[in-house]
Image (cartoon, rainbow, N blue to C red; front, side):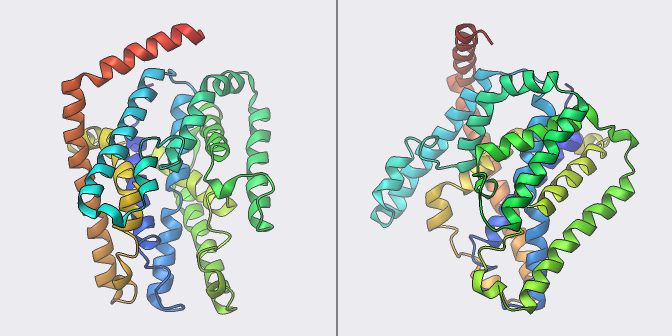
Length: 356
């Protein structure tokens, strides 16, 4: 399928959203902002808007890969990239931080997939292995049957949220199961939703409305005083939440309806997107995430809101651009070592072995 630049742009935007989420959360802003202040509500509004990022990534995967070619070689290359950053960044961290970091984090870097150094990649690996089976099943399902499946996904996520429990082991969306669910919904949109027939203006209104409801719930919980007791467990702001799920799907559709025609913009997107995943791999490396970025942005929590917003955006942009530059250098090294040639050959052998 021809690349859809609107969706490629969504990949970039989603990665930027993830950076914002981590600056607000892991960076310490949300846990230190004065409850009920203007900063408080604005930061939570940004958190709500950005919380769709992971769901969007999985929706994109389902949209394209449900009709795409399953390439083991491409996954192996991705795994090599993950291993490269896991080990290399650990070595650099050891030289700088030394024994400040527990030894287990260094040893875990040798097995990033199995030690869940990167939870999303571990979950994606499971999804990837199931893709050919999922695609065969999806190809045989009718629209009505797939709609039933989507309804069940919404029901399971809603039940997990409404009862503040996890009876279906969705792990609040931090799991292979949830990525498979998002893949299924992405495939449903690809196969059975007429994007051209959808009114873009209505989607914008729905998107704003859903996010307004989420912010309204934050306000209600704040007013009744219960949010302060569980500031890290706002139960309706999770990947499996029907509100976050609806917002994710609506944003995904908006980008589907946003073809990029400007040549300069198209060129930039095509050049940047291949390096975007490295932004995640670099800044969420456990040592960087917990020993470099942890609580690094507390000082912005109660700054004048304009100053705080500008610094959050600048910080996210600098991290994004720095990671892109690092990954560009990594890509040159991989080209020099012909890593893709090796992974493609291994992939071909495995395809022949398993017959898929």
